[in-house]
Amino acid sequence: MKTIKLNNRDQVKTNQDRFESEFIVGSVEGYRMGKETSEKALERAIGFKHDLAWINMSGAALTADYKGKAEDMRKEREAYANAIVLDAGDHVIIEGREYTVKILANHENYSNGIQLIPFSNHPYVK
Image (cartoon, rainbow, N blue to C red; front, side, top):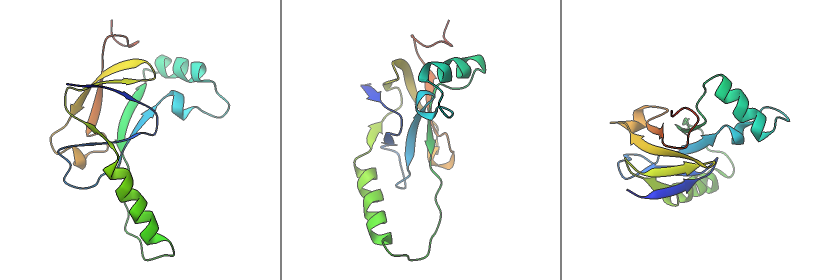
């Protein structure tokens, strides 16, 4: 088990990936509505019992050739190669809140196949 600090929009992966799937970290503070402050976004999310941090897999689409496609694909491969590796049971810290990583079997089949389980200093943990 390792402790990893993650930020909104970090790309992560696992050692179990069969494909170069793009998993992106999200946080309430990183996805504020309009001119909302981080504090207001957090207050709103807690009021609705929304997740405060998450990891989602980005969708994929087939595209025809276009100018710059090779460069875009090179950048995607490079981003995957440099993604932060997560293992089940890792301790992660996002926006100062602590989570334990849970990786579902066949995690690449789900948009939320890498899950964050709230740990000690989280508003939802009593």
